[in-house]
Image 1 (spheres, rainbow, N blue to C red):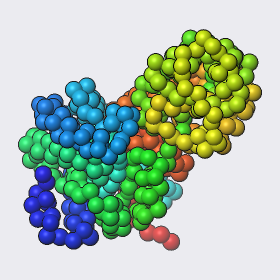
Image 2: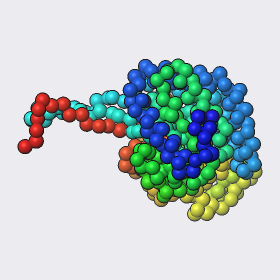
Image 3: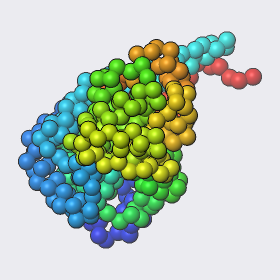
Length: 438
């Protein structure tokens, strides 16, 4: 447990959050003085500590899984919560990948010399103190802390109560390992809010003197609540209503692989497909085929009238449950083995559907026709748009950023996966020899 926990109970909630924020702000000054080599040494030590303590991490996570089951979390959400050997190794690997990336701080982004001889440099800098609010996935703790640390930012982490034991231990191991490897490491560079009190969030996000940015990760309800109560800037994506459009010129086997991967590999994550759009000319052949592939995964299909008629008429298909889709279904991020299905007339109608129902997260077209693909890629205004690839690739690791801290669907500032470079701001440095403004 962090040292703060020793006297936590004696303070009011406002005092607790102010203390966290003040300590993080102070840590920023020390972080700014660390060299790239020092930061990388600390990241390597953090990764090794997570690997060594895999058993303890799984034990802590088992307690959280019990809490999640008692809360009635779905199978998909429990999967997000689970830490096993593979995911612990993935956290360690992500930290090492971040260490291997170029340091994002101190880059000269632009240089110019004015007619009076004043030289100006635009130089990348840390943002400062970043609050990360997230649900279920404890690996976010390592990803977020590692990325913020490498980019020179102090981070305050607020996970869900269902992951409290896992999140606390991950942060504790990282801080202790970094402190042993690097005496200059500021222990308050990584902090976990050690209370499940929901009022802690608005208290923390009111501290504009200390907090520079908030990034919520989770369901639409969480993100909207954070955005509404925050007095500091918020980078957000409200939900991941992702689409795959199978065009009349799609390779059927490729389309099947992509649809199966986009829906079933991990249905509880934000880049999983929620709606399948199928071009009308191929719908009678394609829909029964994909239903047979989805049936072993117990996917429930919520279909529009055209898709439902085709699916229900196919006597050879396995008992894949088909329900009539409501309009609300097409707006919904199910995060589960539920798939909306609609038959569309062409690529233009597919793009219109995505513009109306989508969340500007990740959308894909499967087609062998490059002209149709270009139309889709141009007309669909999402953070990530794919041609003949699964939406599941919208991820910092898959984009070569190492770990990622979140996916932004905002249009102002960062958009898409947020890696190291996206966690920096900049400042202008002026180099003169006595210039004064006339």
